[in-house]
Image (tube, rainbow, N blue to C red; front, side):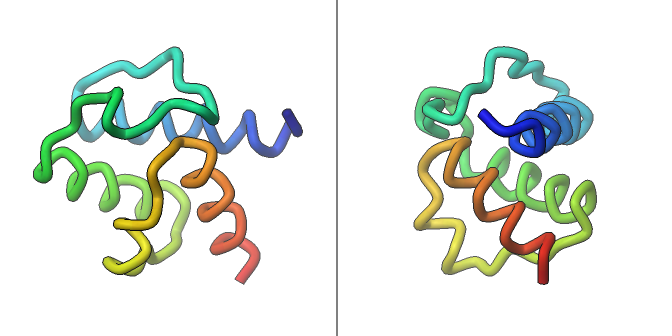
Length: 82
């Protein structure tokens, strides 16, 4: 995995831990959000934390299409380039 991806995952882990008070230290690109057992409020809080941490905006319709940490990392990195 590219170093940039690892940096993004670490920042993602820190943002989730700070916002939700849960540590997902074993996140991998293949980890699904279903596996994380996040409820709808958790997802909203996580998205807000990610937007703040990465200074991006995540469209509501895009959230439904993102199923894994790997897809989220790719999305964050694409949005960060804009």
